[in-house]
Length: 140
Image (tube, rainbow, N blue to C red):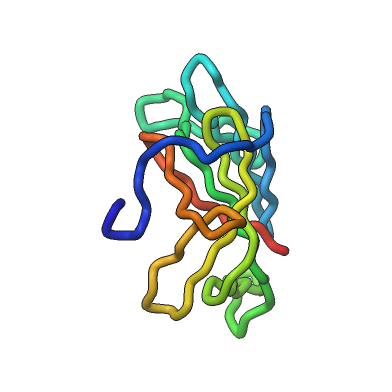
């Protein structure tokens, strides 16, 4: 993770308590629900709990919701539906979910071959909670 510019560490100051967050993307809906008992954001997809291959619930210690511009592309699927293009080069807002709280954040990626940096609104790098990480795109 460190090679990607991400690291584990303490939560930034502040944040607000959050029980769940739903992210809608074209043709998909993902909900993250905080479980204090498991210290994880439990994942549901399109209303159904997401499960591991062993049948357990999928969960993330940290979820980054990256607000991005989504626009039609020149591509489509077999049914004729457009495959959206997600703009991930540039900068914008994000929310980092960890430890049952949501933190306002910023993201920046200067070029297609660069890593994405996630920071507090003041520019300090945001550390992740130890454990699985999910990064999801949310249309602006």
